[in-house]
Length: 491
Image (cartoon, rainbow, N blue to C red):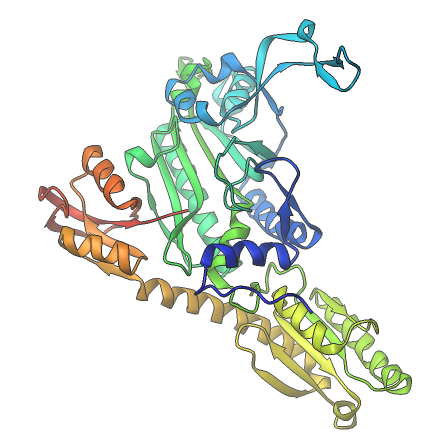
């Protein structure tokens, strides 16, 4: 049986870290700030990746792959971009090692210094736009709709598994368009695809909107985001899509001949989500018993555990269980029959609860006498005896019900923890004592935003799309405001 978790109430940060490790999602590696994604966690990422990949391809995008190494000079060609990433860059300066003079180790060979240093990819705008210059000549080459699945390196000083690591996995889309309107439409379309995925596969409700100027992606004209609320009252940015204007096209001289045979700079977008989504899943749904995973992307949707006292009973249960496995697999439901005799059933119950498997089926000789099996749902701990001949329909409906329950539970939590405030004292009180999203007026100045962040550590997470317009005054400066924005402390 797995060692008991510390509770969320005792120490939320420790609970999260212990849960990620003990459930077999990931562990810290020998390299500072990096993680090993274990098979269970990687299967979860594969399931998420496969769904997103289908969504991207359905919307007209294709996959490609670009180099991990970026010439340092490329990064400097877009001023705000280099400013945004300079402090996180890992740099390759030499290409060879040699034996040390005392023959006790290896050292960098000073004669192998690179003519131009290389940045290990923190994001790929620069290397991709230097490539697009060769691919785009005419309006006939547009739109260019490309995505890549890759790893990136950002030299983070304070790391946490999945949420912030020096290396992580992600996808990054990079598109080129004839017009500003077309590029904005693309950026907005992609943030809605992310929201669709978050809500309909991860069961995580999100707020869709735009970032304030200071929170935008480095080099973007506008950044669109989906923001989710975790169970500790902190916000998590779950995905972003950026309208880049013509900034990178001008930096890398990417022009095309339009239909009037005149040269124009192309319009650009980029967008991405990462393995941070796994952290969002853990924090949005899980409890003190372990993970609770949404069925549509869970590595394992159903586990079957036999209850028996002797080999004869096990043989009877095996036949029924194997038939159920075959039937569930025929309906594309992932299932495992765990009839290992070196572990007791109680140990298995705890282990699969820790791993967040949505449905557990137990089969014993007494159940078989009555043509029944027992279904246990991880999200509510409810147990139900059902006719084994109806198991396929029951499992399918139960998986859907678990998804809906997880989503509605998380939505209610967000609604209960979204607070409107109209004064600075109210704002500070809610931020410090309750947390969650705080809906408040802001005067739209970077100065006020910076002061609020300095005093409370709360940032503007999102200016929601279709935000209701209402007259008010900024909670800090008292200046006029025509809409509320969402503040929160965040990961």
